[in-house]
Amino acid sequence: MHIESPRSARSRKAVTFLRIPVLLAVGMMTMGSGMGNPGCNSGPSGCDEGCAIAGTYQLQFTDSSPPGQDCEAWGLGLHTGPMVLAFDNPNLTTTLNDAEVRGLYYGEPYYSVFLYGSQRLPGSNEYYAITIDAEVTSPAPNKGSAPSVIEGEYKLELSPYGDAGTPGCLIQRHFTATRR
Image 1: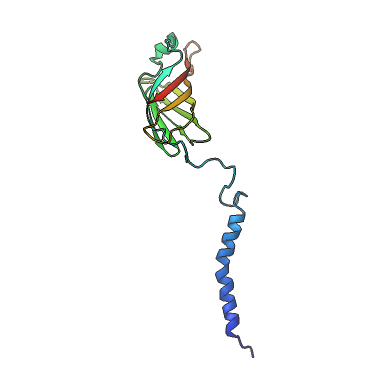
Image 2: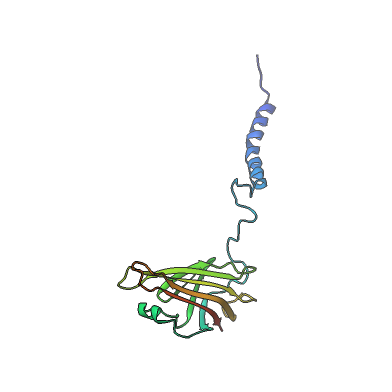
């Protein structure tokens, strides 16, 4: 005849109850091992410092000369007017030359802005692409009312497609964008 004591029943309950904390502890120890959370060196998840980048920036190109006949034939040129940045941590968007360009911004210590977008030319099957590769000059803004400067490269490109004689368009210029 087998008789269970109340103590052994409690032991099984304790073991069952302790499974969850043990599993949580093992999960915490294996973070970054590919078992769950990506852990260290997985890149930033959002902006923490210097994040007040949204706003209206006056865009100035180092070389504001006309882009050339090939680009003008397509109706393409340098962006005119302000660059209005919208920021939804870490997503950054703006519209340049009728193309919505999107990218990411992580603030300090990275300061980098990389935006990309493409747009179809009206009445055509041709697309042009715009790329912004820039940096926010330090100190990065912590308030929306603080001045901010972004410097970098603006690139608009329409690759020649179809006939060999069809010209493309390439505009590549250094710019400074200032929010006062």
